[in-house]
Image (cartoon, rainbow over the protein chains, first blue to last red):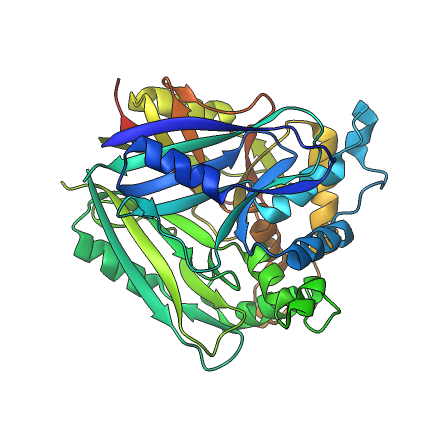
Length: 139
Length: 139
Length: 139
């Protein structure tokens, strides 16, 4: 068995931004040389998430509006007594999920026709990291 | 290490339907011959999920009613400008989760007494797929 | 490849309680001798979750208050017709997630600076279990 580790770095211009990363993950899987197995893609910061869904701008807008309704910014969160102002970002990333595990078959991401991987930033404008851990067999 | 891959197919009669799949997963694990490891069970479509919870019809009803409250159908979602009408299905599956990783110990799914695996369809009545990837050691 | 399995046991004093378990997971990873791979941490009961977020009491309070808003206790859930009274616990754990997969690099949990692992109990005061499955290579 082989294990291959890499990291993706983000520094979004906007506080909240969803970034398409399917191609980055596919490139790391290719570099790993692993043909059959899994790849874990996990946000290393607690105000960001990683999720799989449609690459359609209307839906991305719907997700963001929906998250604002379920976990609004600007409420009187107790977390803000520490000086932070981003409690909603912690909640939003919890809804979206902070990691996915993708199958690799025949050397490629084994995804359905519309599955795309996204990094969901809820408190950006600073450097953040995602760990990508590939595990499996070669050939 | 061994890796074994299989797929489950669904074509639900109703648009929304939760299907019990614990036995299907257990059968694939048995077929794989893997005694110790994990099995990834992941929806390959973005309007369906996979989750672990109770096999009790009242609770399944509660889940569905709750999801309708959190992510209602029929709103004026921007995704619908593409001609789609299923934005709520994308949101609902996000709440339920789109994949689980189950432990395998001594050749069997290592689940707690009430843990059961479900496929949660939110936009059915057409053919869909779940990937099942088993990884681990034999003996 | 090696696979190592262990279990954590909980019996919380309060019905709802979030327990910090990062150190317990790190100790199991160390015991496994696995240097590079992943560890699956998964609640074996369907009214508890496992999640990664900040170890800050204000935020933990915010999470609990938020979950009470999204999935209130005491509603007329159909699940309660079975004699149960904990439908909200099933819903709350679904929001938080019931499992995480953590990367292991150079013999240690490969976590970001603020990532901490929690067991989230929503129907405690009785014995419960979490499975911890470590997979990877040695050296």
